[in-house]
Picture: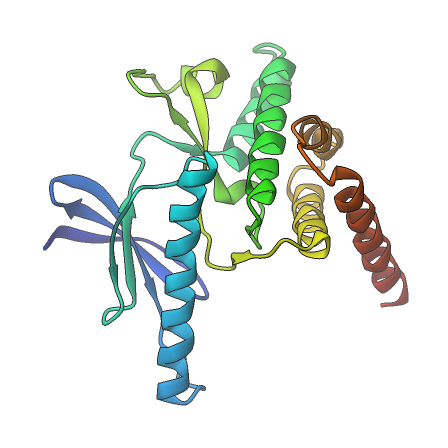
Length: 241
């Protein structure tokens, strides 16, 4: 079924493999068994999470958010088979490399960073407009990939944002909810992730939020108000310890 299975990454919840499936580069996400749970409960929880992740990927397509194409869901093996982007870079690595280039005197790529911030804000807003809560918004869970019919080399991958598009990945913690609370929490998770990973670019979240607001079709004031509430609660917890 799948040729030359190779492990790509292992995390706390799942292993990622790459292979050729039906002639296509494929990523397999395989969820671990949790031995501390009763086997029946573990099977039930894992099945529900796999279903939820697959549902989120399909729903994103309808919402106009680019995600890996879903090939197969295998409940017996606890696996999701999906498109593997051979030419891709995480936004986390993109931002780090941009700053390395600036520091090494190879040019000011602030426009590229601003464009990426805009792409993130618009994409997250599309998710929320369709009541999709990602649950783990970090720049490691966002890819930049070449647009169709664009063949890019290693160097231009980091520079020519107009040739790239954003792909959302890892919907393992996703849910579907219309509440402003969950959308506010989603934004707060993103802000905290950016503060911890990209403190060299303190304006990043503000630019993302500007794009998020500009792309809004409805109830933006309520969502931002809820986000600020969540942020205030988070700061209070940090101060109290």
